[in-house]
Each structure stands twice: as C-alpha cells, then as structure tokens.
Amino acid sequence: MKKITVQIVIHIAAWLCFFMLPFAFYPRPREMDAAFFTERYFTPFFIVNTVFIIAFYYCNTYLFIPGIFDRKKFVFYSALILGLMIVYGLMPRIYHALFGSLTPNFNPNPLPNANRPAGQLPRSRPILSAGNIAIFLLVFVFSTGIKVINQWLRSEQRNKEIANEKLKAELSFLKAQINPHFLFNTLNNIYALASAQSEHTAAAVMKLSSIMRYVLTEARNDLVPLEKEIQFTSHYIELQKMRLTDKTIIDFTVQGDPLGRQIAPLLLLPFVENAFKYGISTRERSPITILLEIKKDSLYFSICNQKHLSTMLRVSDNTGIGISNTRRRLDLFYEDKYALNIEDKNSDFSVKLKIPV
Image (cartoon, rainbow, N blue to C red; front, top):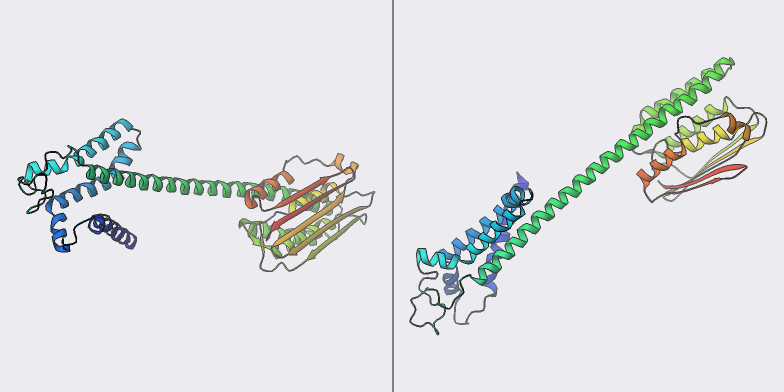
C-alpha cells in the first residue's frame, strides 16, 4: 500500500512539473503579470487538452502496449496511435467548434487579425496543432519507452531468477552425485577392514558416521565454514589410512587461519580421493603430499601423488564422477574467480587450485 501511494505521488509530481514548463519558459512581455498569464493558459481548453494527454499516457502504458502491441498486432497499434495523434492535433479546432473561444477575453494574435473575435482561431493556423503534435509524440515516446524498459527489466530479472534456480539445481545434482559415490568407496574400504577382522573397523565406522553427518547437514548449503571442510578432509584421510600399508606416506599440512572463511562444500574431496585411488601401491613407495595454504582472501590447495601402473590398471572409475565434476562446480560457483592447474605426467599427478575464501 505504501509503495502504491509513493508511485501515485511521484506520478502527480511528474505531471505537475510537465505542465508547468510552458508557464516557466514561455516567452511573454514583461508587462504581462503572472495572474494574466495564468488566466491565459490555465483555461477549460487547457484542462481538456491535459486530461486527454494524461489519459493517453496511461491507456498506452497499461492497455494498448500489453493488450495490442505485445500481442503483435502492430498494424492495429500503429493505426490507433496515428488516429489518436490526429485527434489530439485537431483538439484546438474541435474544442473551438464545440465550445467556442479557446482563451476567453484574450486575443492571441492582435496584429494580423485585429477584427477577429477574441479567442477565435486564426484562418492561417495549420489544421493540426504543431504544439499538440509535439506534446503527443513526447508523451508517446516517454510512455512507450518506460513500458518497454520496465518489461525488459522484469524479463532480465525473471531470466536471472531462472538461471539462479537452474544453477542451484545443477549444483544440487552434482553434490548428490558426489555423496553416493563417496559413500560407495568408503563402504568398500570398511568392508575390506571387516573382512580382515581389523581392529580398526569400529573406528572406521565412527569416522564414516562423522563424515556422513557433515555430508548430510553442512554440505546442503552453498557455502560452508572452511574449518569444517578441512576437518572433513582430515577425517577422510584418516579413514583412508586405516586400510593402507606403510608404503604410503601422507603429508597433510594446513597453513594459515581458516576461521571466518567459507568454501563450496565437498570441493576438495575429488582431488584427494583421486590421489588415494591412483597414487597408492602395496609394493612401491607411495608418497601423497597435500597442502592447504590460506593467504589473505584466497585458499591455495595443492596435492601431488605418484602414478602406479599396476594400480591404474586395477582401478577403474565406472561412475564417471571426479575431476570433471569438480571443474563444472568450480565453473558454476566461482566462474572466472578461480585458477586450476592439473599436471598429468608419466610418473606423477599434481593439482594446484586457487579459490577465493
């Protein structure tokens, strides 16, 4: 209600300013005082002329454009506007024919038509009033422009909302793909521990419980606290250690203060998971180096692992989820604000990622 009231006040003020322009700028003799000038212009004809142009503005804005122009009835719309412009151009003659004098007790052109009755239109005056035509065109352009711009802004806003909803849906889908993929691999690890009757089985179940609690609660959000994402990554690494031999050497380092910073959830997991999937061997030394460095407003993440042919031949990623998924999430969430460099060499594989946090 308040918004409508403000709009009405703005419209009234705009129209008052518009129709006060002739009073402010019209050249008149110095001896013509304000009262006489007001009597000359603010007449019944002025009121009729004004009501017509105001009515045209709102009819064009709220009836003609949405009801005719937007329905692609361009010929009918053009004919209607042209007809109304002609009528408005003839308004002085129509008014004079119906009601007589346009300006009572005033002779607008005393020299060439001294014997003409007061207020009568000069015989040499054009059929269409140039002033009325100019005002009509000005109001037409203004009303059409405002309406078109408003429709364009609403369309852009609607497209933006649709794009945001699509983005949210796609991000949700990508995260939904990651969660079962991660769970599937982790359950396989716990199954291997249970089959071997390892004493680490119970601890592994507790770690998995903590991890899944994070996945099911925090990971629903677009952003999560960086410290929780680091804790999640640390738990995942500890869970992986339970099934590894002493051939695998893991160096996981965090530098800087993560408090107060945020990151897209589950963003680092595919890179870490990839290192454990392809970078470990039961027969060869398998170092994995993971560094998280927090500087100013950026997070620098790097991970490097060796490549083992025997492991790569044995392991296959049937789900198709992984680094390509993460690239897409980075594009969707961070657009051009991130830097990702992946080096896939013969002997090792490394990832360097920089994102704003």
